[in-house]
Image (cartoon, rainbow, N blue to C red; front, side):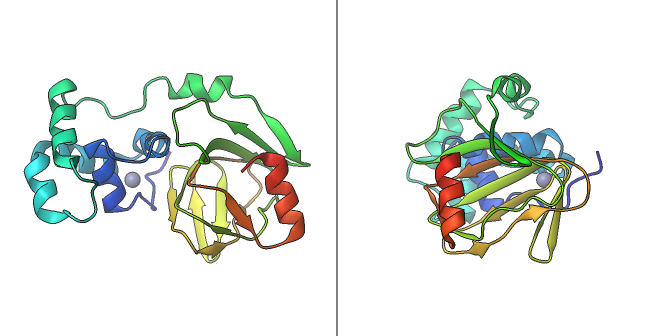
Amino acid sequence: MSQPRHHPEAETLLAYVAGTLRAGFDLAVAAHLHGCAHCCAGVRRLERLGGALLDEIAPAALAEGASAAMMARLDAAPPADPAPRGIDALFATARRRWVAPRVWIAKLDTPHAPGDSIFLLGAGRGARTAPHRHRGRELTQVLQGALRDGDTIYRAGDMAEHDAAQDHFPQVHGDAFCLCLFAIEGRLAARTLPGRIAFGLAGV
Ligand SMILES: [Zn+2]
């Protein structure tokens, strides 16, 4: 796989290292790290720099106690391969549910906040989501194929981050079957009635 061009935000990587990233969202970041030498290097750098740097550069971006959490994590687990462990098994056992002619969703059995959604989405050529707005953050890790969102194309290995109140309209790009891992905070707000019905059926 070629190296990704779209990466998690620095703040997201920092929270991942500190162990303060929202439950479930860490899975998406771990999946990204699996194929991104650039971000793996960033993670190792952050782990070396430790809690002192966190306090210095981003006190407002981290939850209270982040430094202590990070130091505890460093004590408990020395820096090693940041690739996700067991992630392939998690993906393999996820039950797929077809929600549209060329689209399936498989919710993942990984810890997350009530109301959040962590799921794999498989979509064939031409498939698109309903236009929607977020009530919270969304991380999308492209595992296979490509996704177009506005003028940006996210290919296998890329991560897209969206914040609350951003409207967007992702769709499969190209002929290859597209497989993505989504971590979504809260429910999606579809902009159309068919979208609301589709999201309701999919449980997102
Ligand atoms: Zn990266």
